[in-house]
Length: 300
Picture 1 (tube, rainbow, N blue to C red):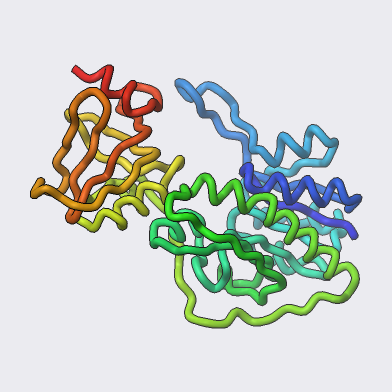
Picture 2 (cartoon, helix red, strand yellow; picture 1 turned 180 degrees about the vertical axis):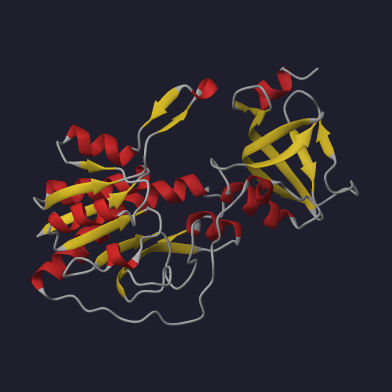
């Protein structure tokens, strides 16, 4: 089976790798264009998918416009049987409807739950106890196509979005391989999504500001749901304070939510509606990420 693979971040690499290692003909990889970033924005950053493809002599395409006639014509000439999409942008119908077997998408949730750009983050922010991955066939409305397979994982009460992301990567890759094999053998059965959908919209910087006038559990879920990226934040001494890891403590001793409580040596906690959030790993504006003791040692 001849496959075109589309994806950009680390999350997509295991799926590409497992298809490549199982002998599938990867006609090309389509990924995001290179961008400048890093310190002073002078470093050219290539996507994780591009790096893997180049290391394994797989052709790479980086179109700015997926509707560009030249790109569409080139795609058609590749004569792929199937397209596989993992963590990529929305495709126009002329692209997703091109191959005989259509386009397979891997999504980081148990559809129809958490349709949208940030399913892993929102599942933890909302305090879910399970998540998973779904393979489905793309159609016009985002994340609504008929499903092929799903795999579930449990979410621990202290799990961060980063930890769930890393756990789902290999599970998702195996699900992609299972789905491609089923499509290839003709044994695939697609089924409509059932149940009330929920949504996982894109997260912006302002979305990440912590509001401590909420229950401790909700604040804790919010912090771990945004860790390590894009990271929940508050302000301290007129500087932005990112919080990567924290633990919850119930029982507020009448402090106003948002109040800082610290001995300046070993603990730093922030009052919530019914308790405290004990900070464990933070990053103050202009400094690197550090353990709370190191942070306190540097306080004036």
